[in-house]
Length: 120
Picture 1: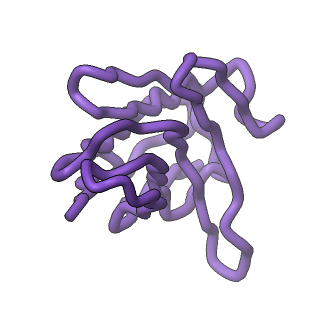
Picture 2: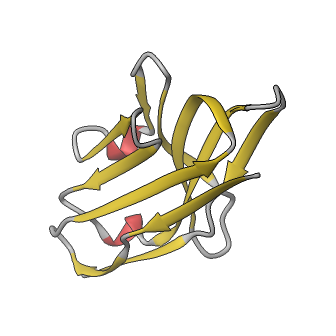
Picture 3: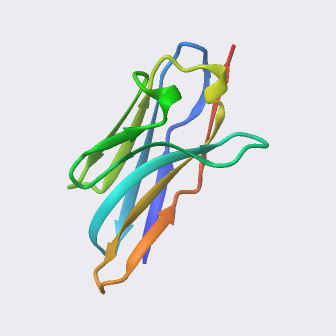
């Protein structure tokens, strides 16, 4: 089994910062891409940022220059540093991890979600 645990999130004023972390644990052989998605009320879930095993990053246009995604392969952790937050960043944020288990099965798991609320 593989589990994801998210932490971080909360309420912050516009212009503030938050840091989200997601730790993967269990029978993991390797992790490929790790990413963060968000879903605002009434909207579809969208990619915020992701990072490959080679640490190539990709960002949604509205967060470029404000958010930074990073990973620690030794700890199977992905982090999203969010600066200069805007009210439109308000959403539930989910981490997603894709990899292979020790018994050779591919997996794609979602975290439980963490609320980020940015007040104006």
